[in-house]
Length: 107
Image (cartoon, rainbow, N blue to C red; front, side, top):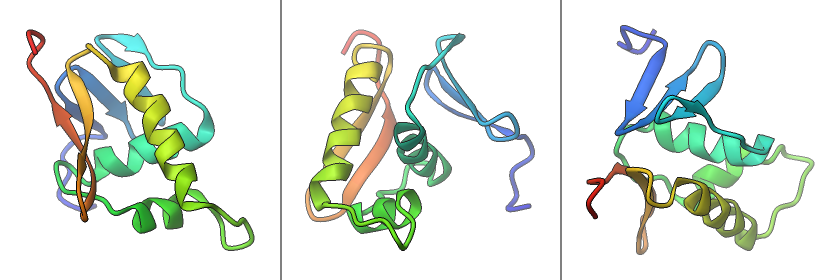
């Protein structure tokens, strides 16, 4: 174990049950494609640290699958739409990658 006391991680209203591999947002199950799930899982597990596109690509695509750099942007875009206005956002850090961040509901 990596010092996680619980199998559940949270970022604002977004929760991830790493045992059941289920995301919930504000208590409702979040419907994700397998690749969207993989992107969000990597961001959640990195807990507030930036994740580069290359690192996301390595986690999402197997060695025999070719991926275009745009693929990650497409998955991030879809996830942003699903998370929009729900208290959590994926932030782009130019030159560094992506970061999952809790937002104020008022923002």
